[in-house]
Length: 396
Image (cartoon, rainbow, N blue to C red; front, side, top):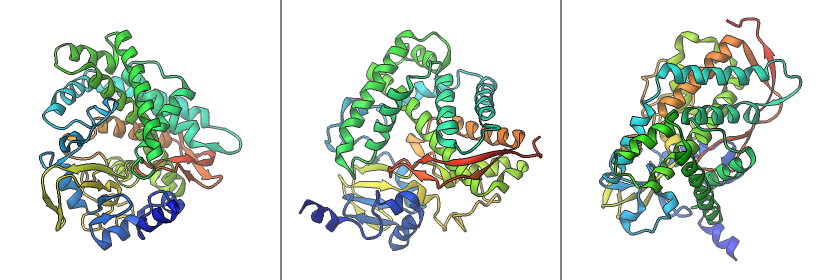
């Protein structure tokens, strides 16, 4: 009977964890948007927002829409209180601290660090016989090594860290599968403990050292600092590795994109718009408000489908195609407003270094099996991207 009850409330247009949706969610987002840009979804018990203008409205309005569900009386585990979940004015102190730490390291140093890591990882792929998985052999190790190098800490133990990281990603879908919530909270606590040790042991180099110095002069609770640094670590690993994986999958299908070095910035912007891993973000209505002509009441949850907004034809004509003549900077892949992604510049730099290294090294990939995706709805990512690797004669 439980299965029948669950099936009864599943939305006929969008079933988040259905295999067909995991494989390619974008046609389903389009159907939702064409039905109504603000659509009540019974199964999610939330407003699903798919229009660009509506998503941008909510993202930019922290007065009426919050990331901090405590504002409507919901208890939040301490492990979830971080720069990602706090709203202004509490949010201001920790964000200012992290932004100041971000700018401590010279950009040229960071770029060289990233370039070295990318080049080393690509050299390991070159000349590999047979099939190579670009997720486990490139995207994941590059993301982990770049974020830990930037933080100024040693890469954590592979198997244990991977288990924690995956549990956090899966817990982002706890509204769909509630059993995913507690393992995610436990994993957040474990990673926060790891970060707390880093803070205790850190020298004055790297992002963690800079954050520790900044924290001495600012009134930021130690737990919020540790949780926020954990969020930076996790996003720098999971979001970036999934972005790189999605872009590599596109380049496997469309190798001609690498032949356009003059259009780097436009291409990067389009790749982030189309292949950004963040599919959705949630906000809670704090004060009654209208969104897309719908009356949204205090306590209502809104799930903002960023990936759908980034394909809204009202803003992006021919939305599923790479168009290098589009106006740059319109997409919402890094959010907007107070909670805009802190690491947007770093992620963009990493993608730029990967594209540059692929062009310079002349590596080309051909499919060696089907691309498969992790069974996650909120943060999309490839589980495997099997390719054969060859060296182009046009390396430069």
